[in-house]
Length: 406
Figure 1 (cartoon, rainbow, N blue to C red):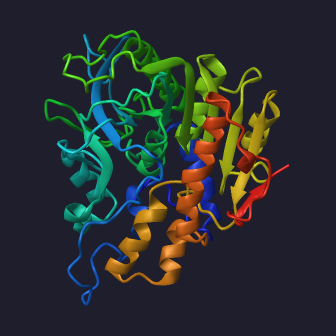
Figure 2: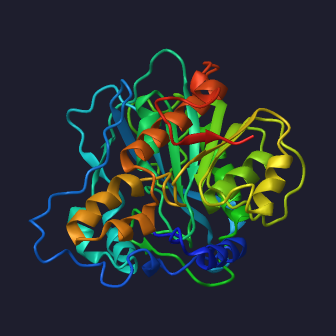
C-alpha cells in the first residue's frame, strides 16, 4: 500500500512523469495507486480481518522504539523563525524478551487515516497490519555491538513502507533505523501533530535533503552508541539500547527517491560502509560528483541502467564492490511491503488479476517477499559482518526470477 508512484507496467508515459517528479523532489498523485472504483470492498467480500505481514525468519524476536529528533544545524524555513529540521525515526532491534510489550502498528494511528484517504483506500483503516516489533522491549546484547542500517523511504510515502525488510534485518541481529522525511511523508509527532506531504516548492524534499536527514541520523546513531539519548524530550529508551550500536558498522538503504538519497549519502559520508538502492532513479540533485569505492548494490525493477541514463551514470562511478540484480516481472513497488499486502487487498476489493498486476507487476508475490528478505540481508552480512554470502555470487535455484546484470 505504498503510494508513491504508481506506474502500471504498461504506463511508460506515467513512468517518465514519475522520473520528472522525482528529479524535482515531487511525487505523482497518491490516488493513482487505487484507480477508479478500486477503493471499496467487493459487495460479496467476507468480513475481513487485519492484513498480515510475513513473520521475520531470523532467530531473534524484534523490539522497536520511536525517536523524536531535531537537527539544530538546519533551520526550517517552512515552520518559521526559530524552528529547525524535525524528524521522527524508529529503531528496530533484536530483543531479549517481548512477552510484556505491545506490538507496534504498521504506521502511527494519526498518520494512517490521511495516508489511506489520499490513496483512495480509506476502507482499510481498521484492517492495517501489525508489525513483529514490540514497543520498548529490552535489547538483546549478544556480546558484540549491533551493526546498524538506516532506511530512507520514497516520495510521498512513510517510514513503515518497508517493514518486511526492516524487521527481517532486526530479527537477524541488526539495529535498523527508519527515517520519516518531514514534508514528504505521513507521520505523527509525540505531541499529536500529524505531518502529511507538502506541495510547497520551498520544502526540503530533494534527494539531497533526504541524504542530509540520513547523515543527521548517523550523528544520532553515534550518540546512542556513546550512551547518550538523542530524543528531544529525553523519553525513556528500551533497556540496553544505549551503548549497543556499532558506529563502525553502518549501512544504508532506500527505495525510489530514498534509493537515490542513499546513493547521495553514501557518496558524501564515509561512515556508511555499504549502500543499497531499491529501484532508485538516481536523479541526483545536486548533480552526481565523485566516485564511490565502498560496496554498493542496486536492486532494479523499472529504473534500470538499460533504460535510464542517470542509473547507468551512477553505476559507472562505482569503483569498489558492486552488484546489480533485477527480479523479472518486478514493478517499481515490488521491493517493499506492497507485495505482501496488495494481494490481500485485491481479494478484499475484488480486483481482477490484471488490476493487481498493474500495481505490483507479474513477479510472484511470495517469491518477491522472499527476495526482499534474503538479498538485503546477504548484502549487509557480507559487507558489515564480513560473512561471505554465496547468494550474491550468481543466480540461485531458490530465486529463479533474480537475474544478475553485467
